[in-house]
Amino acid sequence: MRISKSLRALLARDSGSSSAVAEQNGTQGGFTLIELLAVLLILSILVTFLVRSVRSAQISVEVGNTKALIQTIGGLVQEYYNEFERFPPSTFPASLDPKPNRINMGVEMLVISLWRQGRPWQAAEIGEDALGNTDGDSTKTTLTRFSSPDAFELIDLWGNPLAYIHRRDYEKEIHYLTYDEVGLDIEGPVKGRVSRKTGDPHRKSSFQIISAGPDGIFGNADDIANFEIERD
Image 1 (cartoon, one colour):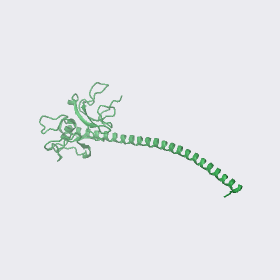
Image 2 (cartoon, rainbow, N blue to C red; image 1 turned 45 degrees about the vertical axis):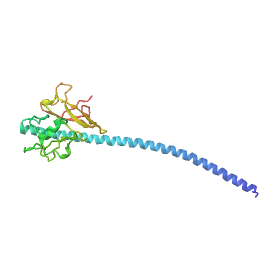
Image 3 (tube, helix red, strand yellow; image 1 turned 180 degrees about the horizontal axis):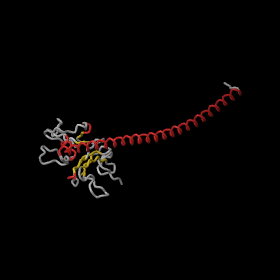
Image 4 (tube, helix red, strand yellow; image 1 turned 30 degrees about the vertical axis):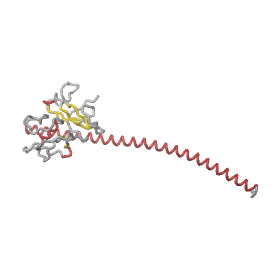
């Protein structure tokens, strides 16, 4: 079948228009992809910044609450002193039977002292949310007013045991079990902290209470205590 010249010209013109549209669409599609990638990059940066900001704010709240908890415990220890004319020990006395294991011994002995069976005085101001048992030890019979025989510790906002050290034990190394930020367990010795300025222990005539802080490691600058931690 023969096609007239006018029809052939019209088909050629339509074909050229379609090619131009396709090229234009292809160019627009390329720019749209680049723009999309740029937007995704910006969004990822903003999300990262937001997550860090939220985490930083959360840590600030946890640090503040841990400081308040330590202050409350310190007040109860002072009340104990006023009642019994001595601070709670931070090692297990020979008369204590049965004894838990020696991990987290200082703070476990503090719990036993504050919630001891047969004593009218007890630490009613501290709720059970502040109690934990990171090393999982227990005794055959309970040593406290609690029905559970678990050897409880007082824990910070990150679930790690607080270190309690009586002034007599500042030189001793008492091992504590904590968990770092990724959940790895860390066991190591904790001693009384010494002032760089004076060379004497902080609170040399009473006791120290120390949290391992957000990183879960004792001895770092992020530790929290009932005295001013010296930063590098």
